[in-house]
Image 1 (cartoon, rainbow, N blue to C red):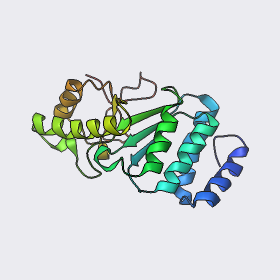
Image 2 (cartoon, rainbow, N blue to C red):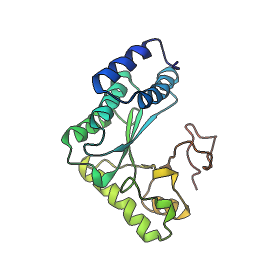
Image 3 (spheres, helix red, strand yellow):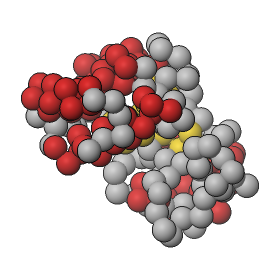
Image 4 (cartoon, helix red, strand yellow):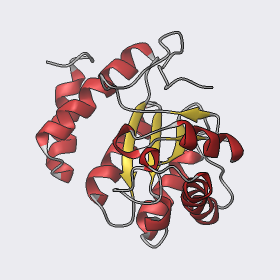
Length: 192
């Protein structure tokens, strides 16, 4: 059922019952977490970190990753992050583990803007920078270097904006419409 050790069932049950994470989300996370525990080659990307949104579920997954040494990338929506002190402190606690176990990824200015659909470089760069600056202010100067576009929406304009802002990685979900560089581990969208 899982790619992880037999204790995965115990972990699944304890997380599900203590947080009431919807079982399909938990099972998908456990699949990736189990692979990560077994091989240390994968990072769980947990997106849409924002104030009060799925707070208990997200905090439980972050706790589980921290407790089990599973690397996690937290996709933060900058302008909607910072007033929920419990979530902010949990993210800071995770970041204290160091970059090999925790990173914050800029997940854009909101949950619906498809930056790759916008053609105006200044507009795209301002939207990315708004989220970037919000994350820096909330996380005491932490500087995200990875960007995860909503709905895998990216373009040459977005790539240029991210380069201008010194981003190092653009990451996306695996999707048949995306072009990936399979020589990179983990795979990332092509880096120009």
